[in-house]
Structures are given as C-alpha cells and as structure tokens.
Length: 152
Image (cartoon, rainbow, N blue to C red; front, top):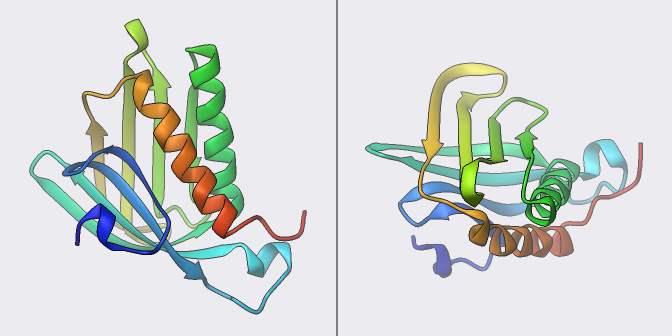
C-alpha cells in the first residue's frame, strides 16, 4: 500500500522507501476518555532502511506524538538541537537532530515486541531542515484526529 492509499492519518520521517512511516489506525480504547487509557493509539509502523524493512503493529501514545511534534518544531525554528520520540512500551525510539549545514541526523531503534524481542537499529540518510515542516504538519494532522485526552 502506498502512503496515499489510506484514510488513516500518518507521518513519514524520510522518503518513500527510506524512512519511518507511522500510520495511526485508531484509539486502542475508543470508549475511554481518561489520560492513561484514552491516549493509547493503535499504530502501524513501517521502517525502510537500506535493504532492511520492518512492519510493526505498535501501541504509541497521543502525548508521545505531540511532544515529538513540539520538539521538531523547536529544532526547525532554532536550526539546532535534537528531539527523541520514545514510546512508553519501547516499540520505537527515533532521534532527530540538526547537524552541520542544516542536515538532519535520524537514528532509530524498532522492536517487534514491547520492551524486548528482535531489534532493528537504523539511520535515515539524506534529510535536511526542509523536511521538517511537512513532518510537523503531518503530526499536527494526527493530533487533530487523535487529540491528547485528559491530563496527568
């Protein structure tokens, strides 16, 4: 399935065939409206890195994606810094940082089981600051569809 063939909101960090695609399929507990249960999101995560590919069904949280969006917007504005998406159950760890001349460093770790299992460590090459506005906009779209519920 191509990136454009789904009605589910998604974000692509990279390019088709080289990067991380996170597609949010829905809330894990659609009837919950509290912070702890209501913010779990069923997510399909596709990692394409060089000759490697991983497809994961992951539980991510709405506030994790919001925090990642906020951090990416900040490093775009500052043209420096680093931000990490860390999933609570350790499905995905994705660090985006600004390196020399506006280039981005994107390093990741994907697991096929929460907190353990098989691991794929990867890098996404060839990205620069010009990619960040689209990534931030896509994360804003996910947040609009699945806003953070409740508060700590």
